[in-house]
Structures are given as structure tokens and as C-alpha cells.
Amino acid sequence: MSDCNPKQSYIGSQFSAIVPQCEDKATPFIHKFRTIRHKYIYDVNTGRIVQVDAVTWDIIDDFGSLSKSQIISKYGPRYKSDEISIAHNDIKHVRQQEGLLLSTRPKQIMMPHTEDCIRQMLASNREQLILNVSEACNFRCAYCVFGEADPTRRSHTGRMMNWDTAKAAIDEFLLNSKKADHRAVTFYGGEPLLNLELLRRCVAYIRQDPQNEDVYFGLTTNGSLLTNEVGKFLASANVGITVSLDGPQHVHDKYRRGQGGNGTWHMVVNGVRRFLDNHPEYKTNGRMRFAAVSVPGTDVLEVDDFFRMSDLFSKGMGTSAMSVDPSCTTFLESLPSEDRRLHGIEELYQNFICNLVNGKIGDNLTDRAFVLQRAYFEQAFLRLHKRPYATQDHPIITDRMCVSSACIPGIRRTFVTVDGDYLVCERVPESDYMIIGNVREGVDVSKVREMYKEWVECNADECRLCWCLTICQAGCFSNVHENGVVTQNAKRKACTISRESIHRSLINYCSVLEHNPKAFDYMADITVA
Image 1 (spheres, rainbow, N blue to C red):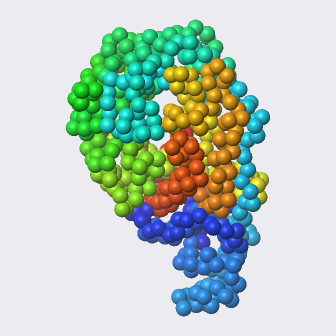
Image 2 (cartoon, one colour):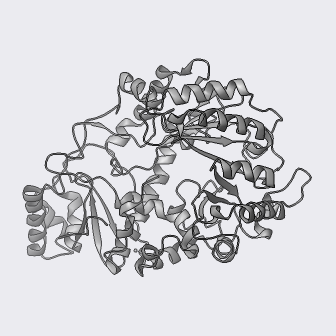
């Protein structure tokens, strides 16, 4: 039995059980997985990954529930009795000497924060204000959630946020974000540049106070309105710009169309080129990035070629990537074998793994060759690499645990509708359930606490016994709702996807380390999103 590189498939695809524990047991609180080369155990109590032999791999499931003699009898047809005895003694030894493979499971999942604590954070640690300055848009993208693609969302309208609403939101945010490490005010739509004068006024208003010099400005745009005048304003205010661009023309134009049904690729690319010609500093200052959306049928290898080879991009520009395929959205790295609906996604994934093994990504973090691979797949490995570890003074698993992978509504992000209502974030539907306040009264602390409490408690007993307990990725409110309301069923589905994703990531994480023990060292200074 040997411990994997604790900072830790080619590539393994074998799956052991990925279901959560269903009852309190005396058996070790673990999860088993294997690569092509080795068998491993993820130890929930310590966060360590341990490589084990075949005998230990098999008998571990019965350790603590069967006696040694019963285990020897059960596995005798497969292994020699002395092999079983040695493995049994090894498990017992590491339990006593290293605190590994314990059966400790929490007895209760608690709320991580009291109402007073949540109130204090909402009064001083707000991080990002997202102003939905325009419900109007000059595009009609086929997959847009504000079109016909999602009946639970609002449709396109011509409504714009007014100054009184924006000012009230800004004042309330600035007042309640003074202790935040980073503060940002970002503009959202629709197409936010259709309300350009409000953007100008917001920026000028915030910048007039020297205490607000640290506030970051950003917007997401379709890029078609990046005229000389607009570009001059954005660059002078040092606004971060995210441009929606799905790849080469034939990929982009298939879904991103104008109101008349025409393709928009040339409009976007011409706008970006014009902006970069006038403000070349945006090629290297990290203030311009691109957001690529993939739909079923998209050949992501063509998109990857585009981002690697187009002269539109430089090393200083980032790219985010997502899929509108419900089987691939939040946990794309799970890549279910029965539904590879994004053409080339498995090949792109394997390319990413190969580049990790060969150490290419760590040596070339800003290289365009890896921008899309990193956008799709890196965060899953980053979360594993920076997973929590137990120490003698700070165990991970306790009787009463405060565990939640959900953000507290209103602290990381506050989304403001054109009418001035506050939503959890820009990704949730504008339902009454998701409203957490408004610009006149501020954030409703009681509502936030109740939402957070419901998220924690709706599957608390399943969470308590789940092997993903401390590395859960099923936290976002946008993933656990049905028709705008958080439900146990929706959260259970998100948990299933999360477990499948983490299981596959564990396999590939350890497989990479088998070939290159330093493959993930480059992640030391990268923050988990």
C-alpha cells in the first residue's frame, strides 16, 4: 500500500461504483477507482489518494463488517489465505498508525454560517455587481436562453435599465463591499452596448471617488458594436471585455445570427479587429477574452484550430468555453461515453491529457495552442489538485460538519434586473424564488439564509454519506433548480453528474501522475474558479 503524490488515466476508463454510501457503516469511508496501471483508493477522511494491491482493493469493502476469518473464507477462492491476512493486517496498521481508511462519517450536516455571519458578509464582503443594463439585443442566437430555447426565461424585450436603478444598485454595492478583496461592476444584457450612455454614467460615477479606484469594470458583448467611439470609452476606462465568438465562420454563423437571420461572424470579427487596431494594449494586458459556446454537433477540434491559429488572438487573451448540451454543460469533463454529442470532444480531452503528461501546459500557460483545452478541462483537475487534506489538528470529517459547495447568494455575485430586483447570479432564471432583494431595500438576509439552508438540508443525509463530501462540485444554484425553484430531485441529478465527473477526473489525474509526477505543479498559483 503506497500513498500517491498527495498533490496529485494512458488513460484509464474503468469505473467502479460511483454511487454514494447509502447507510452508516463500519467499513472505511472511501472511493475506489483504477487506472490501466494501478488500483487506488480515495480516502475521504484524509483527502489522500492511496495506491493499493489487488487483494486490498477487493477486501477493503468488507473490512469492519466481516471478521478476518470471514474475509479469508469469502476471498479464499481468489487469493491465498496468507495474502488476505497480510492485506488485512496492512489495513489495520495504517488505520492505527496513519489515520487512513477510517470509517468515520459525519452524523449531521450543518449550515456553514449563521444568519448573523451572513448578514455581516453581505454588509461588507460583496464581490461583484452585475447590472443587466439592457434586455434588448441586436442578435437572435438560436441557443440564447432569452429566446425560445428556454421557456422559463424572459424573452427579448426593448427594455433598458435607467440611471436611478443603476445608481441605487451601485451605491448599495459600494457601501457593502468595503472589506472585499476584489470588487467588480460588470455590465450584462441582452447587448449591454445598446445602453452605452448608462455605462458611461456608471463608470464616471464610480470613478469620481478615489476610494473606488480598485473597482474592476467588465462587460460581455457580442462585439458587433465595438465602434471607434465605443472602443475609445472602453479602453480609457480600462474595461475588461468578453466577446462572444464561437469559432470559425461556419461554426459561429450556424447559431449566432442577426435579427434578420443573417450570420454575424464578420460583424464580430470586424469589431474586434477595429478595437485591437486602435487599442493594441488589449492584446497583452489580459483585458480581452473570448467566450465560445458549443452546441450538439459542433466540431470542437475546428474551434480549437481557430483559437490556436487565428491572427485575431494573442497570448494575453483568454478564452472560456461552455456547451449548451445538457449532458455536457457544467461537468463537461465527465464525457459520458454514450453521448459524445460534441464532435471531437474526446480527442480534445485526450490531447489535453497528453499535454499534461508531456509537461507542455505547465511550461506554456499563455500559449494559444492550449487555450481551449484549458478552458474546457483544467478546472476539474485543479479542484482535485487543491482538494482539502486532513491534519492532526484539523480533521476533514467531524461529527457535525459544515459543508457546502454552493456560494452564498449575494456575496460572490449580485445580478440586478432592469427593474432593480436582485437575483442570485446571471445564470439563474428570473423567478420569484431566485429574487433575493432589490435596489431599494438591499439584500434580504432572511431570504438568503433560507435559500442557503434549503440547499444544504434538502439532501443532507445523502451528502453526509457521499464519498464526494469534501470535493463536491454540485454547488451552483443554477444547476439545482426546476422551473426556477431548488428541488431535491434537481440537486440529486446534479450530484450524480458531479460524482461521475469526479470519478473520471480521479482516474485521469492519477494516470497523468503515473507518467509525470510534476505534471500539476504549475497549478500552484492558479485559483479554483
